[in-house]
Amino acid sequence: MAHRIWNETMECMDRESMRKIQSIRLREIVEHVYHNTPFYRNKMQELGITPEDINSVDDLVKLPFTVKTDLRDNYPFGLFAVPSSEIVRVHASSGTTGKPTVVGYTRKDLTTWSEVMARTFTGAGVHSNDFIQIAYGYGLFTGGLGAHYGAEKVGASVIPISGGNTDKQLQLIQDFKTNAIAMTPSYALHLAEVMEERGIDPESLDLRVGIFGAEPWTESMRKEIEERLKIKAIDIYGLSEIIGPGVSFECEDQCGLHINEDHFIPEIVDPETLKPVAEGEEGELVFTTVTKEGLPLLRYRTKDLTSLNYEKCSCGRTLVRMKKCTGRSDDMLIIRGVNVFPSQVESVLLEMSETEPHYLLIVERVGTMDTLTVMVEVQNEFFSDEISKLEALQKKIKQNIQNLLGLSVNVKLVEPKTIERTAGKSKRVIDKRVLQ
Image 1 (cartoon, helix red, strand yellow):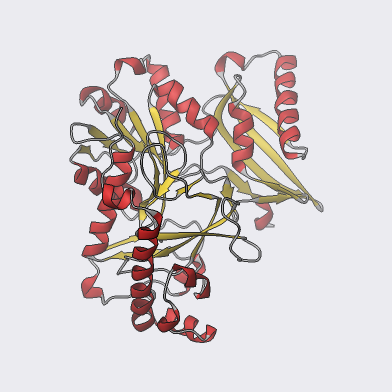
Image 2 (tube, rainbow, N blue to C red; image 1 turned 45 degrees about the vertical axis):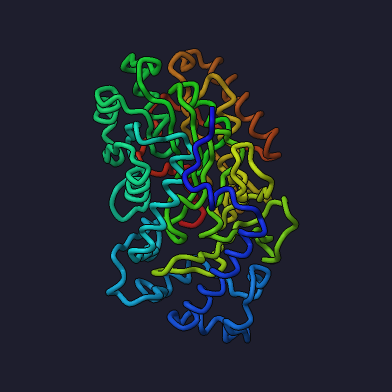
C-alpha cells in the first residue's frame, strides 16, 4: 500500500534543507522572544547573549532552558509574546497541583496546529472518506480540539463525541460505521472490555485504526489493543506547552514517531548534566518552538525520556523520529535506591494471561523503609475461590516483577473493575510518601 503523506515538501525534505529552514526560523523566534517576552530577555541577558549570537541550529546550546515551573511562575499570561488582542484561543493543563499551565494561540498558531495534526492523521492512514470519532476530552485540555481541527483539515467526517459515555461511544461506532478512533490507550482497552461484555464482535465493525496518545503506553499494551479491537494502533505524542497533540506521530509502519521538526526542533540532553548526548543515545527530550507566535518556548524540558533516529523511514519521510518514550524523568519512582517506571510493571502484567491491563502502584513509607504495592485486576475466569490458586498467581506476579526491577514488591490481587476507569489519563501511581 502506498503511504499517504500530507505535506511531502516538508515531511520528505533532505537534512541540509531542513537545517537551513530551522536555522532561519530559530533566528526569527529568538529575535521575537527577546523583544516581546521579558522573561526570555532577562534569561538571555543573564547568560550574556543577544539574538545576534544565534546564527544556526548549532547555536541552540547557547540558549536558556525552560521548565514547566517557569510557566506557572508567570501565570497566567506572562510568557505570551503577543498582545492579548492577537490571542484567539487559550488552553490550560489540568495540573494536579498548583496553578495550571496556560497556553495561548494566535490565528497562525491554530493554522500550524491544524497542519501538524493533518500530517498526524494522514500518517495513520486516515483520509477524507473516513469517519473519525474524537474521544479525547474537549475543553481546556488540548487533545479534543487539537485532533478535531486536524481531522477536518484532512477532510475526514469528524464525530466530536469527547471523552467518556462508553455506551454512546459504542452506539456511534456501530451506527455511524466509524473507521478511526482517537482516544487514550487505556480508554481503548476499557472500550474493548465493554465490547466483550456486550458480545460486540470487533470484526463486525468498520474500525480500522486508532490514534492513541496523552499517556505513556507500552508495546505490550499496543498488541493488546490491536488484538482485542482488531485495528492498527498508532502512537502520537504532544504536550500543551509545545502545541498540544501533533508534535510527533507514527506512520503506518510503526517504527518511531516522526517529529514535525520544521516547527519544533528537538534535542536530547542528559537529564542530570543537561549536556547534549551522542546521536542515538537516550536522554531527556527538549523542544524549541520556531513557528509559534503566542507562546514560543526556548529549549523546553519535557522530562520525557527517548532517543532520536535521523535515518529515512521506510514510509519515505525524512523527519527525525523519536523512539516511543520509555518513561518520564519526573514520573520515575525511586524506591530503596531502585529507579522504577510504571510502564515497566505494566509490561510484566500484560505478558500474563491471568491479569487485566489495569493496575495501580501504591508507594508508602513504613518506618524508614519505602514499600511498593502493585494492585492488579485478575481476569474473571482466574479469580477463583481457591486460595491456593490465587496465592500461586500472586507469587508468580511478584517474582516476575522482582526479576525485572531487582526489587521486592507486594502484590494485591483484586476482582475485575475494582480499579477506577477514566476516559482521560489513567492514574497509575499513588505516592503516599509525599503526604507524610
